[in-house]
Every structure is written in C-alpha cells, then in structure tokens.
Length: 218
Image (cartoon, rainbow, N blue to C red; front, side, top):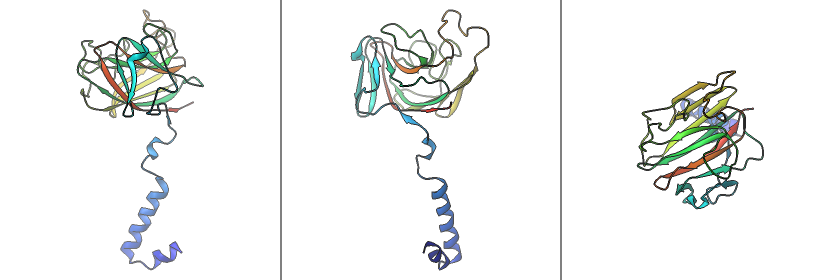
C-alpha cells in the first residue's frame, strides 16, 4: 500500500518522501545518540545513591541533584562495578562553587575519597584547578564554561586511557603510565574499577547535576 502511494506521487515528492522514510528507519528517534546509556538518577529522589558524612548537603529539586552544605560525597550504589565506560553528566556551577565527579571509587564514611580519580567541577572557586581537569593529574586552568549555565561533562575510560570533554570540547586525553603511580602522594588515584560519586565540597558551594547517564564499554 505504501509503495503504491509513492508511485502515484510526483517525482520530486516521491524522492523527498523516500529520503525522509530512510532517515526515520536509520534514526529511530531524536534520542538515538543516547542509545545504550542507562540513567543513574531518577530526578525525583536519592534512590540508588548513598551519601557519606553530612547527608543533608544533598537534595533533589525540579529534577536536579543539588549539593549545598558541608563536605559530603554521594556514591552511586552500582550492582556491578564499572571499568570501561562513557559517563555523561549535565552540570551547573554557581559563582565561587566547587565540586567533583569521581569514578573507579568506593563508598567511604567520611573524608575525601581515597580511591579513584576525580574530574574537577569548578569555574570560579579559588582553587586554581578548574572544571574538566583530572584533579591533581592533568589540571585545567581556563575551562570553556561559565557559572549559572548548564554544561555537559563527558568522561570516557577505555583501558589505560581517560578522556574528558566539556560541551564537546576535549580537555583531557591521558594515558595512565604502566609500572608507576600517577600521583605518589595519592596511591588510590589509579585505574581499577568501582562506582561513581559526586562531591559536595564546602558550605559555600552550590552546584547542580542532572541527566546522569552511563554506557558500559566492556
């Protein structure tokens, strides 16, 4: 039936319809680029996440994860550890705020996470290590993002390689050395496997997160 309708159309219209049909077949929806990703945050509550010290530093508002308060880390309760992956997180900082996104980490009750790497979240906080850097390993001084504006942090870990993008702009392309620690002062800063966590840095820092999604690359 559909083929008969195309045959009755004028040549130009038939070609245009055929092209559009092909596009819809090859691109099932606008979210095709997100195929294979799993959401880590339901936008309603902290289900699936576990906070360390100062639990009240975390809240959910209008579909966003909000960190505002004393130091705390919010760990994703993964059923299976993540090793090779692609993680995307939408982030919005406020003036003078500081936070972070950890990977290959593990829950701990208090203190700064000792296991895994941290991707810095900081546009105008006093710490000179800015957003998009691999904290203490490959630091960024001038990020291509602004406060009070949403930007996407994309992290890809594959084997020994770590790549970080902000709004599609590559900030870090780092290959972990074999046979030595990336940072001798922090022996836990190395690739292994684990979960993700978000950082609430200090009482003056207010940072928003949303659209947390991950794709396993194993």
